[in-house]
Amino acid sequence: MRETRESEARVALVPELVAKLTALGHEVLVETGAGLGALADDAAYAEAGASVVDDPLPDAGLVLSVQPLTREAARRLPSGAVTVSFLPTALEPDLVRDLRDLSVTSLAMELVPRISRAQSMDALSSQSLVAGYRCAIVCAGLLRRFFPLNMTAAGTVPPAEVVVLGAGVAGLQAIATAKRLGAVVKAYDVRAAAAEEIRSMGAQAIELDLPTLEGAGGYAREMSEERSRLQRELLAPYVANADGLITTAAVPGRTAPVLVTRAMVEQMRAGSVVVDLAADSGGNVEGVVAGDVVRIGHAQVWGGRNVPSQMPGPASRLYAQNVVNLVTLLAPEGELVLDLDDEILAGACVTHAGVIRHEPTRVLVEGPAEGEVQ
Image (cartoon, rainbow, N blue to C red; front, side, top):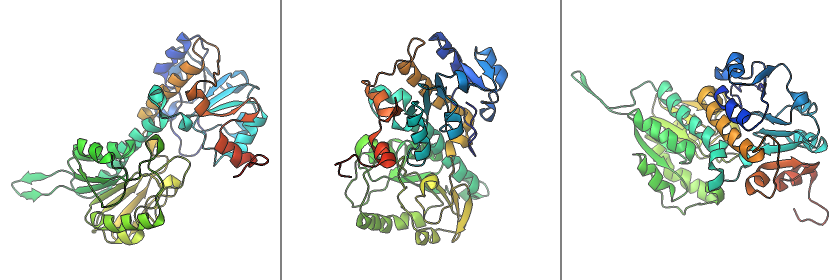
């Protein structure tokens, strides 16, 4: 499908992967202009074996997209069709109702379980990789000084100091990129296991005298307000001394934790830069605005908005590979075989056969079942 939502330049299938689907026996229809934002023109899809059409929906058995379909598009699908996309159900309850009522099967890429067998389908990780790189580049671009150490006949220019908060996939990629650019990098994550990963990237792990918050699926557990306050207090001097601050702490479907207050940013030096990858979900930095650069004290604060889409070429290639791997599991021989006994497909399934199967979404949309305690 051609993406229609604001600021979305990615595409769910790139030309070089069309052959993988046709080899399985699928007929691939690509909506006219679908790949233009990711620099893939219609001719490239046609040469790869796809049919480029103005309206692929009426004949679609399986619909691939990055963002969820619009409600209007969903209503034009044949009953029993399958959609594969990101599907933030808490933000799209009306669409979920429509998909249920239309007997459309919907698979959400962000719900693919984080298990070894599903790593090749983990779109959250692939897109976080892109976002982490982009954040470091934005920080370097906004900072009006060198990242690396420079020793010249005219004198020595010290390296910039960059602090990264959050060491998941995006944070580690931001650390690695900032290091390659020559900055001195320090990083912190609430999970104790992340310290070794931070060091493996050549950065200094910031160690605070606070209990670890290891959670399920590789994410951090939610912290108490008291712990959050202590953490901000202990991080304040690291933030104040940073030339660049990059924050990456976000969990899909939840409001991002506030790691840095406005008062902390106001202590940063003149010309400093803050890059908040979590701005779309509320932000890690107090006062951040998604899609904009605001000034707090002496610092420029950049709020990331759909950051992977800002690098649509590589983001699309990685996402498309995730999607093709899922389709290979879903329809291995040219026909859809939705095996809901498979933990990957069961975990990713939101709606099927007129039922909302993802329990948190069902409770959100339909409310607790009779006699069920919410």
